[in-house]
Length: 139
Image (cartoon, rainbow, N blue to C red):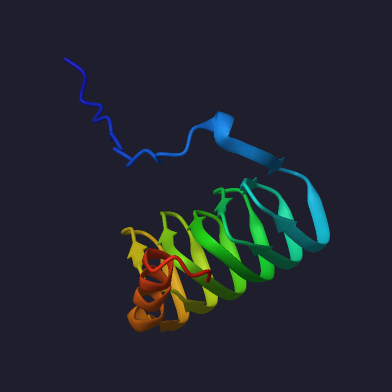
């Protein structure tokens, strides 16, 4: 009856609930400086500077980030220019645009992501961290 085709996009839902996010920079917001946090943070606005955490940083589709980032996990869907060092993993979700360096033991990239840069995956460091934790040491 209708010749209109509907495009259904199935997106893998994050295991992170909205209630777990402790700080949020919304669309249209701008921030410049150093961001340090211990729980999950989401950025959907413009950010310039440095980000440091052992937890998760979520960068939404509307975000425009120029930064040096050191986090546990990075989930990126927006525009990013800079350097990333993630202890656990980096997830690049469509329509992310990345221009920079990524250092992580685990990387996932969805179709539709634009990635221009250098990737370093050092599994030995990640395994050494896990063994230190199992042995009761601190990392």
